[in-house]
Image (cartoon, rainbow, N blue to C red; front, side, top):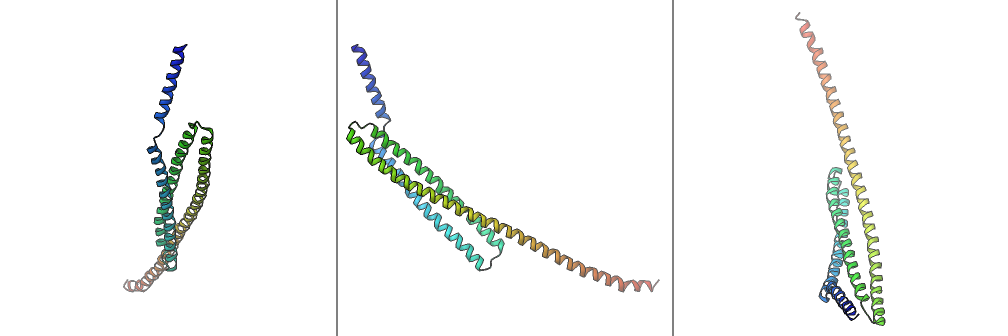
Length: 210
């Protein structure tokens, strides 16, 4: 019986030791927190850059329209720089996803550490702080997602502008072809009249020598 109790006690110690080995150290937890902060800062910088670039590209198109640049030039401009806006949006979206993933890892550590607190009152106070922090984070993250959806709507509107510009380029190109065809017709009519005049005036010259 004593041997059984001793073996059970040793097994408990081994399990406790194993749990401790898997637990993150204080330095690791601090590093995890700093990673979340760095990712959040990156998201803020990327979103600001995204906003500035959208405004810049948008103003560039307005200036092009006001200065009567050709539809082809406007289409090329919008296609190039709006493509860059898409890339910036994708970077921001991926960064936000990564931020949330790391944040969830952070909260998981908070819950895990709380589960090991033995004092009930201390455990409850600690969990309350975690839940308050989690609630604030979730509200901010939800707001960020809503903003991201609005940014996606902006992208779709920009894509619509590009499609309209492309069709305007096509219509412009077709109109140019119609102009070319009309010019061909005019020149062919002139050519036909000249050939007819040549024939009319020259035929008698040959006929009178027969």
